[in-house]
Image (cartoon, helix red, strand yellow):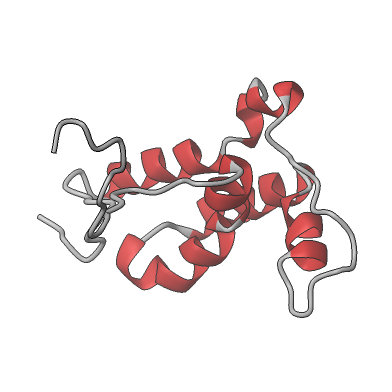
Length: 117
């Protein structure tokens, strides 16, 4: 078996996968997630209003409306996680929402969002 260079893979498990552009997979889609699950997240109206404004200001709404629809446009999807966005913490909706959710529910579990204390 040691001389066999092939890997005989029978399966794979991916925990917490980000397998593409992190901006698309974490930042852009988060507004819909927060809106849909707010009955469990308990974020107040003023936070949601500010959250939506940042979503718009950072171009996430425009990107979502153009590229994350069916059928998708006949062009390459732009990558939004370049150096200017990577260092633009004002557009970090993921950490913004996560911090707000923890304020409301210190026991928040990102993998099981209905858990409370």
